[in-house]
Image (cartoon, rainbow, N blue to C red; front, side):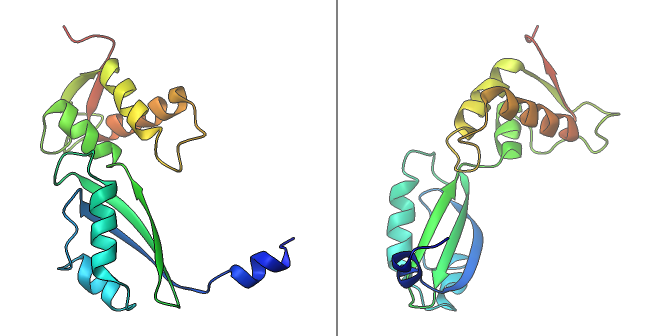
Length: 155
């Protein structure tokens, strides 16, 4: 049950916007400008805050961001680390996965890389309560669908 204070302080949501923006590269140009502009949100405030939050990542790393736009023209946003597929492609040094996963192996990766990716993904809001083992299993499943074989150690 909600308290009266929670009900009174709740702001009506105008929209939820999902974008992929390069780390440190938020500018009021497309795709950010038109997406936020139609809800009359402060573009420069978003760009400055997003760029400050993504400073620790290498420039132009694709970051998933979810923006909640409120009807009073304010907003909140959460930034997620890059996708698992992006990390796997970077670790394997490939442009894309296998065209026929399960039949053709694109490359092999060590379990060590899977563990490192899992440690990074643990900081994401939706993974913070998952164990490293379950995150690693998810990453291995993604690798299998990309045609990347996981081995204990690279020869």
